[in-house]
Image (cartoon, rainbow, N blue to C red; front, side, top):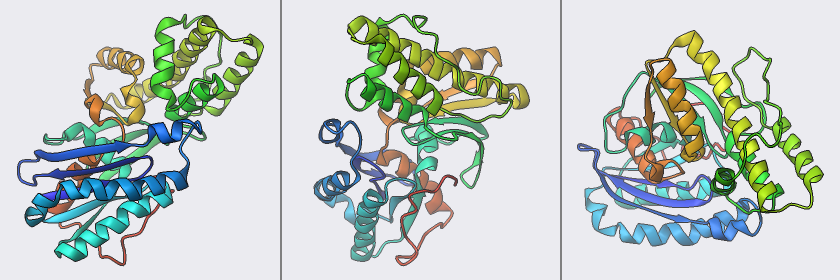
Length: 329
């Protein structure tokens, strides 16, 4: 079995995966959402302290599996440096104590492999990764053959939901809150600009849309439940339409046989519905990660680690370091 650790942001998570069957033996996550919600976003130093408390509690529950462990895997990039270090420190300690090899896992690969938890991988596959930190279109041919086709030049899709929620005074995390209000609203109430509408490039930008929402909120005060719902719906419509326009440009060029959405923000059902329609239009098979594995989790890290284990892709204690700003694979 492989023990995997995820601590790239504000979720403390440990999983144990069977190497041969790919079965998930143990998986538990301790979320920090409540602690960070009062600040309207993740506070890195607080997240680090909470990982220091939570990870040992989870590890204690895994003690009965220690004799069966063949490796320990940990997220090393990208993420918050102070939180990545917590997981890496624990992984190194486990490696030394049990005399088992270390596996360094890229968090973005983890999200892609969230599609394959307890399953065989499906390649080639074109991936839309949408999260609080990333908005990317990725061509994936194998675990070591992944290419970013388009990325955000400023804010991410998920981050924009968090920021709009904060501007509306709705709390954190913003994704599910905005989606909830949007269901009650009229998405055509406010005419917000679609980012990079006239650009031929396959890239994303949410800073301009975020500013347009800010101005709309200022002009709509005092806010009530109806206005908040209408602003949320109008924002969500345009945020998703931006992704659809850029993804459609890629579909016209490459006509992918397989397409998937991954990442925390891929749990947005409005986005899923629109992408599903696009895939049907281009006869592309759509793959979706189960909702429980969309956000950061150690199960996806463990699934990547199985393939790395089979390739003998290990790392030494001295070479295992955090790489918080890594944008590639």
